[in-house]
Length: 202
Image (cartoon, rainbow, N blue to C red; front, side, top):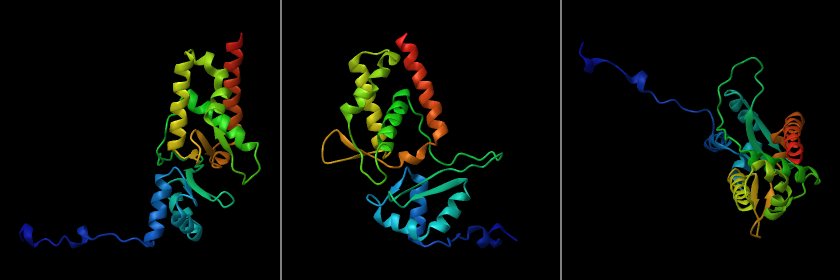
């Protein structure tokens, strides 16, 4: 028997999916992230609602939870609580700077003061003023500090935490911030930053 006589048909067979094409597209979008919204992804959003059960099962296969917020019409995935299992990292992670983190906390605080379903619009100068308390910790001049604020503002826009409005430098805070962190995480980070501010005041 020569090499040409070997039947390799089984090895080259193409696997097929049990999912419909639009369901597969929704699954890919959920894995790519950062989030799906009815406003930006109407077709995908409808598919997520229709096929939530199977999508929830498929993301669970790769150690993820599917979060579907019907009220705010958004969906995203996050790492599942796997207990003692050493689960691999699936989602792309972004290392947050000090400024990114304090800006997220400030935006989340504004969001939590609003009523569920209410749009929250924020001005860049308003956030910059709130974060001024951290400038001494950053040990930088006002222009350098504002540059770091602008960089974080741009990053959070890129990841859909902030969405553009019809007015320049005024953005809408995504309601996803209500669910990204639990109360214990927020308390821990906020407590650490308060310690930093207290030390700077001494």
